[in-house]
Image (cartoon, rainbow, N blue to C red; front, side, top):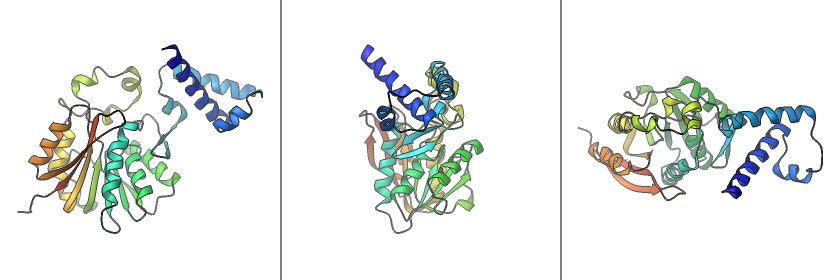
Amino acid sequence: MEQEDEQTAGFLTRNLLCHVTGKTPEQIIAQREMYVSKEVSNDLETLVQRVLSGEPLAYVLGEWDFHGLKLTVNPDVLIPRDDTCAVTDMAIRQALLLNDNPRILDLCTGSGCIGLAIAKKIPDGKVTLADVSRKALDVAKKNVVAHKLTGRVACVQVDALQKPPTFLGKFDLIVSNPPYITTREMLQLPDSVARYEPRLALHGGSDGLDFYRAIAEDFSAALKPRGYLCFEFGMGQGDAVCEILESNGYTVLERSRDYNDRERAVLARYDRKDV
C-alpha cells in the first residue's frame, strides 16, 4: 500500500511540475538538480492544495489524455476514462468498414473524446459531436479546433432524450456514452466525482437506462438503412441494454470488454424494415 501511495504521489507531482513549468518529464529528470523560481514554486503549491482538497487531477491541469489525444477538460464535462476506449475502439473498427465519407454521430459527446478519436482514425469521416449542454459543447469546440478538425467535425446541441431534429440528417454510425448511473448509485459516488463532475452527464434515471431506451427508440430515425449503433454501458448493464436494442429492431453484433476485463460496450445494427 505504501508503494502504491508513493507511486501515486510521484505521478501527481510529475504531472503538476510539468504543467507549471511547461517541460516534459524527460526535461524535468534531466534538470532535476536545478532550482525552480519562486513563482513556479507558488503555482505548484496552489495546484497541490487543489489536489489535496479532492479535486481531480484532470480538472486541476485543465487537460487529459485520451486515445492519444490531449483534450481540454473542465467540470462542465466528464473526465475521459480508459473504460471508454472499449466503445471507442469498437466504433473505430466498424467505421473502417463503412463506405467512403461515412457520417458518424457522437451523441452525449461531453469533451468530444470519442468522436475526435474516431475522426483522427477515419480521415474521410464526417463527425458530428452532439450534447444537450452548451457548456460541454464549448469544451468540445475547443478540442475540435486544437486538433485542427474543424473541416470534418461539427458541434450541435441535441437532447438525446428527445426525438432527433431533422437537420441532423442520416448517419452511418451513432456512438454514445450516455449517462448511466442509477439514482441509488448517485448517492454513493466517490467524493471527487460527486463534488466535481457534472451530474447532467452521470444520472441515467432510476435504473440508469433512460438514455438507452430513448436513443434506441428514437435515434433509429437518424440512421441510414442498416446503420450501426454503439453504446458504452455501466457494470452489469449489458444484458438489459441488449434487450432494449433488440426490442427496438436492432441486431446485436458484438459485446466488448474494457482494459479491466469488464463488459463495457455493444455494437448493434438497425434491421427493422420501415413500415
